[in-house]
Length: 302
Length: 224
Image 1 (cartoon, each protein chain N blue to C red):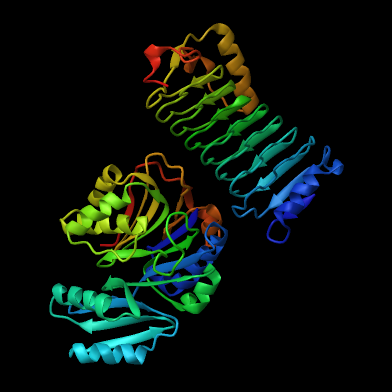
Image 2 (cartoon, each protein chain N blue to C red; image 1 turned 180 degrees about the horizontal axis):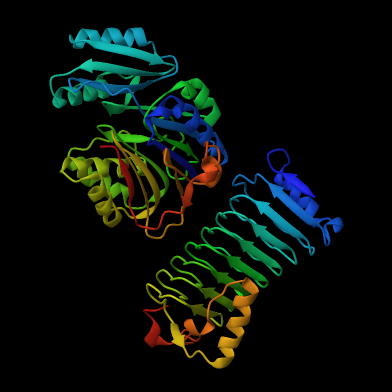
């Protein structure tokens, strides 16, 4: 069992409250997932000539030292903003390949850190422990943004480590949180690795994120990628998916994992259970419904 | 008696419902906020008015009590209900009325997948539509759907009866349409009236078991 939450603001005036609202939702899902928690938050998009990368280090990681290692290797303008054992890097890049190269260099050469997200707006913070501890550790309540996803994990399929925590991102600004279990993830991981998708863990949900990344890289829209996922992913899932400008929800055709959607003029929220949505202002007047099996629900900002 | 679940625990409410003092008492439940197990295991002829949305397993194992939810209900509503009346003004999530033995369950909105799964004597009336695999292995009782039904309605059904006003995406294995006699119409009209729904019983079709799966038959091996 796991808990998932998502919040997408339609009204930009609310953006300063995103971190607080998402934290309240996440904490409500504590008893669905006390092992670890994580959030993906979309805010402060960098320019087209820059890339934003979230790094996750060991608890005693020395960010000064990491910065030094990066400076030895890369000469362009790089800013690094540590937040506990995570740090957000913004670097100038001339091309997407350069950003990819940097991410893979970090993955292979810097033993003490992992890359959790790459893109222009996304940042991912995740950690073992109870949701309220994770909220405090990263000061999530103070974060502003356009949309965010969160996950509370009760592991059934792979180890309880920070690396195995959700959200998973395997492509630019794309991330996914999952409640359920996939049964064909090993086969699919091998297939995707041959197509150049990189994975950091043996987790099934990371394969779902990788699958969407692959479809999107082939030119599919998010809706088309999810349509294909219904055919190719075998198992149980409720997914919430974030892209730079969009938010989507999908349940498998059997739909035994719970999900609730709610929408007002100001926001769209999804959660495993209503009690997370009940925390939101004006939830009393929201349109509330259970997403149908195998039907894609998506919202996108133009 | 009033229970505000912002202050009081669900357990406190449920223990009050189990106590002898609950007989013929009226309970009002404020701010349920999607909490689990609200008003489960009631045993007396009490009335419980829940003013908001509830989470998992509301009104589970209910006996005798009349429970009204002024909102939506999460998964497992009135699971294994024995008797009494449970009424939800909004929608219900999956497997509402599962294994319920008796009483009347009314959902004025839609019910999700697996509604009435393995029902054993309860009457379920859904004002809206229901999801897939509803009335799976339903043994006895009646499931009335005023809207449409999802895939595999009544799969492997035993002797429960299904009354459907709209259409089913598909019927499950061994579930067939059956004749709607005057007697059936009369009984259905009485049930609709009990549920407070104003539909003409003649606008429903009746479905039930073809009884082809009761005994092992090698010709049916692919259906088992």
